[in-house]
Length: 276
Length: 280
Image (cartoon, rainbow over all chains, first blue to last red; front, side, top):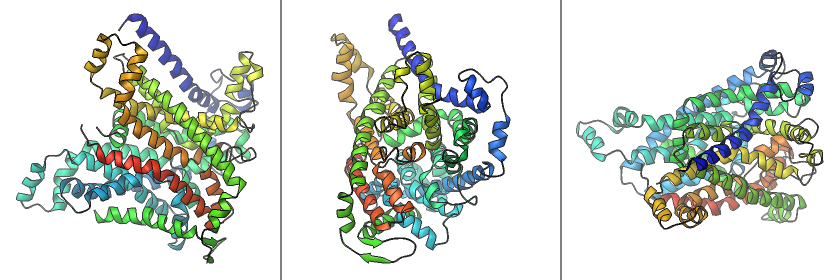
């Protein structure tokens, strides 16, 4: 490629990257300023970083983020473990055996990926109320599992279909049951795709907002995303520094996961959505 | 296998059926006081100016969402599908907003579009373009496009990744052959690359359609549907009617309507995914 072309492409990319990151820069510097400093030193780096903004939003007496942050983990981790387990067991027969209605069962998965929340939420709300699971982390976990299984199963099915059938047959000849085959052969072979699913679901469920908003109502179970959204609509709306600090705190887990595993992450998006 | 499909039945199929049933009921407030009224909720909905307004807003959302993030993602993918160093860095930068919660995106853009001290107006004033410094979120005309821009910031990286995957599957010799034949850059893009990207395009268009039909989160966080309902989407009204006004029958009719709109792209998507087989 000609040099001037290279330079041109770099220049465009750098400008776009700056535009893309400007909001992030803005929110980081804002989180470390006092309200007064935001007013007179808008763009500059904070003169005296106000770290107490973070400790304040984290642990202030009302609407401190800490319990909500913990709720988010209590919801996210079990949900993603169950999604992966259920989906592994469903993907195995779907990819390895001829079963009746295989195409329909697969179509159900893809269809499930595209379902809008609005057609599900009223019955789910009523159902959790009737089961006394409204405003509990268990209720949310249940919903996340059901909603999360289709994509994970589809992802695993695609991955497993490339495992040679002989591998499984030889295990069967040795007298292993299906359950044993899954644990001793399939899961080890599927480690990469399991990692992809864990990373994707961690981000999705941690960032989830709609179900959290509707299915929880108190410090018992409200996830951090919903708690932070209330900052925008309450007395805290004017405290931009607190809003910025809270935003950064709840973005941290998913950002860390993304930056640490970005290779898996991007691969997962590709595998799940575009086949071939 | 059975537990997985049982969960899907419980959390997806049973609720779909129940919402369809509930949309035929007069069912309001706490409890289960229901009365069958046939299609009355739908008739009322189609005669409700609030519904028509949200439908109009949603159509604008769909159109802009099919333009901004999709074309943006395609251009980014073209720029990155070269053997330049630092590709990964740029990929990470452009995808970064995609791993941030809607809520945070909402807060960031509330602060950016704020009319008095928002970043956007501060920049415009610094450039002595005060005349362009608007009340972005307070204006009936500008609020919706502003939210769509916020949403595109988050979504464009996803489109980029899908297009990159598609571009990387185009064999190099095809492009080289085009160059040998003397194809200009724009000819290469429109005559060779875009036709070859058709499978990716189907996926991106369908996912984009589905996402814009059901959009809710950013509207809720940034404007709550205002000013004067100028940013209400169908998904937002569905929430408001069901969980604020507690009109379950009416809310379910909205839900069914959203569902029906998504079934068309959703069926195309399902057929496409079943047809093409995987290769790694």
